[in-house]
Length: 200
Picture 1 (cartoon, rainbow, N blue to C red):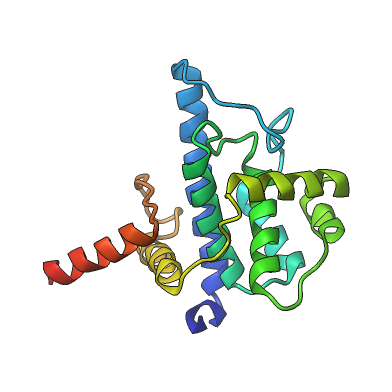
Picture 2: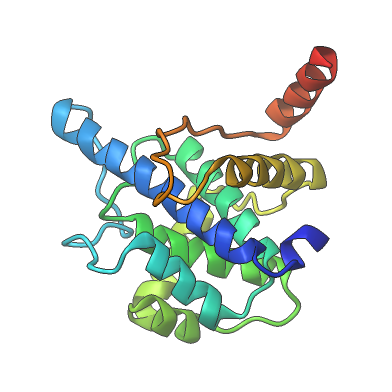
C-alpha cells in the first residue's frame, strides 16, 4: 500500500496504534479491578507490567524487525481477531507487549518474502526464544489459524487508522478525548461501506 510507504506515515501510525492499545489496556485494567469479570491468565501475561512504554516497544519493533509497513496493519487485524475469539483474554498492561511482538512476527511471516526467525524476534521483544515459540503457537491457535486478511478487510482497518490519525493532533497542543475503538470483520467492513455510500 503506497500510503504506508510515505515518509512520516509510519511514525504517526505507530504513535496512534500505541495510543489506541494503551487506552484499551488501561480500560481493561480498570474493568478488571472494578468488576469480578474473570480474565484468564495466559502465556501472554507477564508477572509484572513491562517498564517500556507501548510506543517505545512498537518503535523498537519497527526499527529492528525490518518488516513491511503493512505488517503493522495486519498485526492490528490479528490482535482484533484474537480478542474477538478469546474474550476471556482481553488486552491489558500485563499482556499487550507479548501480544504485539507475536502479532507483528506472525504478520511478517505471513506477508513478507523475507523475515527474521523467532530467535531474532525474541531478542527484539526482550524474551527468550523458547517463550517466543510458545507465544507464536498459542497465538496461532487463538486465531484458529485464520491468518488471511482480505483486501477489503485490510483497507477497512487501514482507512480507520488513517482517519483516526488525521483527527489526532499533537497532545502538547490539544487534549484529545479518548475515542471508542472500532473493530471490523469482513461482514462489518462491507456493511460499513454500504452505510457510508447511503449517507452520501
